[in-house]
Picture 1: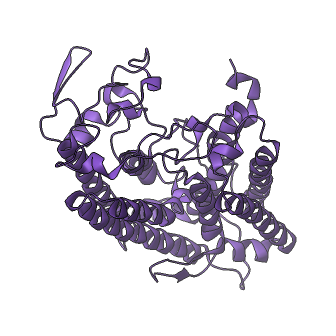
Picture 2: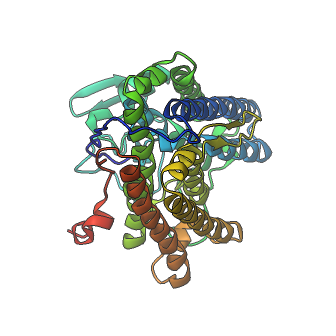
Length: 420
């Protein structure tokens, strides 16, 4: 998770809307209903993941490890589509780091390869290895980790020492425990943790009982955190109340802030262009599992969902209703066509990247130095995101909202700073 200054929103009262246009209140209702459906799907798929992890711990076989990994990947799909709700909704932003923070210094959690190193000037917990150490003494502080619990992870280890790279909770901590480090750089291959790392009778990696304890605790905590966000977007929930309190113009500004900030600074910039510039696999989002292409693809789908007012749920919780797209079409049909064309072009670019990954070249290989063809596929996806953001800015003007500050990224706005 990268840290940014929050975007400032200001909205003015909308002018009279043509009779055939979607009413702003209905658009906000659809937006909230989609959030509720997506977080509900995220919760249900996390519970399926929990069942698969329980089976892995009870019977640590290669088959059960593969099943747990598959369940993790499936759980990521609905969650990543929620990211368009970030940046404009403070409740989501204040919560999001608990479940999707990245990148992480994995030495905080478990054993790592010697190439990882033993210390870091920036992070006293860099190689603390809580799984191997029931008592941690770092920077004059002693942490009792004799029993690994959700409370220990959330209250003592998450962002320990006020360092964002100390990610002890959420999807990526679970990902690391299921896959282990990806030591392949920009060559083929993901993490390759053996199932025996959870086998107390034939333990590899040491501390198998504590590793299972950590995995269980992290998964339990993920479910608890997702339950919180499901409740926030349920009818009468805190997130809906906060959105409604902004008024119609403020609510529409929130939708567009999420679309533009995810499209530009977060996805095009921090998650994609930065790693491409550095050719650095450490900058890929799902770096242990090589699932990054799907996380990026689902972010793009999520942006489309909130604009078109439609969500196709993997669990049958489909939503379709009044949309921002309908409002734009009533105000400026040409811009509506432009916006759809830009969103479609972006989806096509990400489908090409997804197809390349599914054909055998993972995202970290695509961004590797010297892979001109792979680099070009990623750059095309970045370009499409940047291009669609200019149209999102035009939507803001057509709907007569005050200017919105989308999240930025040095990789796009000041590339020379990346290498300083």
